[in-house]
Length: 239
Image (cartoon, rainbow, N blue to C red; front, side):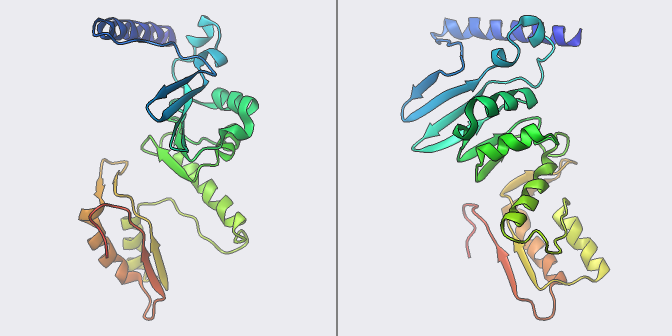
């Protein structure tokens, strides 16, 4: 019943939106799988729509959440994969239909996250993007499973049998605990984000937080440390 209500609300919203925008001269196109649109030097290719997964209206009414158009945007040879709110059925469709054609330079993680299933895992392996865009906060929808990628990278680098300790934690809180425990490190490598929010609404801004964090980390360095490396691409911050 809730799904049917959602469906009707969505139809009402888009009907109202289309009516208003049409009055301003906006042209609407119904996206279909296989279509390509060109805007300036960019190409948009539609890879799947909800009709591929739920071709009948009664099926779609049961899947208003977790259904999306999947498409790529190619600009100057760089391909960006947009998955929207797609989930297992869409990914399975894409794997069968496209295979290695899914390879992209960037991928937007689905709003429903990486998940635990082999279907999502295989999809992102096919996309094989070196850059990932996380559209969610990370905890509720399984983005923490990115740890799986890190472990696979370790195996690919010949480090799968090494004593690596994998942690998904708040870095500041982790370092504070290590200070209390008296643990020391010979090397620290950081790749901090420019901006982020924690699960409790905490705000991280690199230019405001990095100096105090580096000072905090100095308390866990050994007496004769080997290195401290900080990677940053934030504008305005440089050695």
